[in-house]
Length: 204
Image (tube, rainbow, N blue to C red):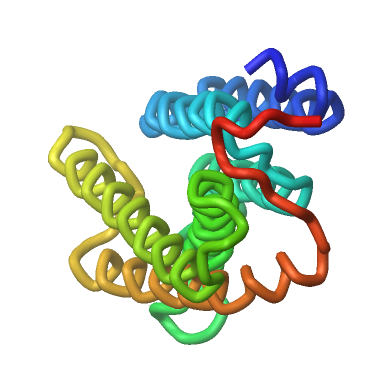
């Protein structure tokens, strides 16, 4: 964690600032789900910080994940017109703001998985194989998220999670985001021109 904070100081400040502000906002508003956002987003940030020492995630992935956290917390805690942002429909009744966040977020989770897998297996592994593996990781993370959301709905109080149809469309958005990121990852890697050494290789 210290390494990430040291090398990405502005990113760390940005995350701590919005994380603190939105938790205070949610608590002041008496939002039941504030504690879940605190645990989920905070835990995800700690995981990314822990993996950073191995994966050395690039700035695009790190800022994408940070913005995902912001959109996720704001979407579930900030209300506009008495309704949280997540529940506002953009096109039709089912295409809500949360679907965009799912697409965006699990797309960046897949890009992060690509960089981690690439670091693990080295530069000689075929990009297509790495991308497919990363896509399945992204899908798995999305499935874990939906499982957690389902368990939250079993608790008393208004969770703002939604029903079976919402879960289904969330999974569709997750899959589209993961697939899009998997297709883009090899191209982004070639564009960056970065040489990735496998884990355990001495760094210059």
